[in-house]
Amino acid sequence: MTKNNKKISRVLFIGSKKLGLQCLDLLEQLNREALLGAVTIDDREDSRSVFFDFKKLCFKKKIKLFVTKNKKEFNQTIKKLKPDFCIVAGWYWLIDNEILSLIPHGSVGLHGSLLPKYRGGSPAVWAVINGEKETGISLFSFADGMDNGEIWAQVRVPIKGDDYIGDVLTEIENASLDILKNNYYKILRHKIKPKKQDQSKATYCAQRIPEDGLIDWKKPSIDIYNLIRAQSEPYPGAFTIFNGKKLIIWRAKPSKLVYYGTPGQVAKIAKEGVYIICGDQKPIILETVQLEHEDKVSAKEIIKSIKIRFK
Image (cartoon, rainbow, N blue to C red; front, side, top):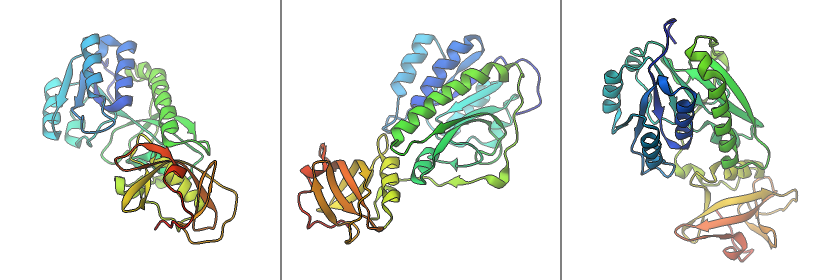
């Protein structure tokens, strides 16, 4: 953020997906006069896309919408529009330093963690995988590194032991809207100042792909349970291989029992689900599963023998 005390009057929104759509709608409600327009991307190939909702919202609210096909076109759009200030939520590409330098009052974004922890991609997923008890949302300035700019505000979001990633993302979305609502005017009017991050406490998240959801049954049961929670909807799901097909595990719960056996072995089929032995001899109870290209069902409808062993 530059030290520029002139009035911020040309705010450009940059974003996509559900959170981006909600943020754009909120910004329009908070200060329509300052909103220059919105930049998004045609991301209909992404299962989380709300591209048509962006178009509908902008048409209804008479917001100028700019759809960019690639990073080059995005850069050209920013140069053409010459915004004073940018708000970014749910964006796909890193914004080049050259482009950031053209925006007099800088750009701020929403990141789903308590920075400087969990910089990078899929921070909420990694937080659940790691068994964290809380995560959060950070409103921060874009700088010349990965999520390392100054912080304007943060809100903590608890993660309960039975929360799935969809629950956590909903709470983060709600906190994101609150943090914008409480700080947007203050930033536009220069009523608050950001604080530097403690770079020594930074941790980073690598990008994830669907194949990262493969379950290693040799791991402790709590680690497997956390992976299942973290990879559940809206993500592709944690999975194992059954009769040569992916068996996606959407819902499961830990058990306090101890079962001696081979990790991946079916130990028990009961009313509440199918017990699978994990590396610490504690089972996970599978509840809702899905063979690829088939419907979701209860685990006991597919797994019917205690002779089965998952690799």
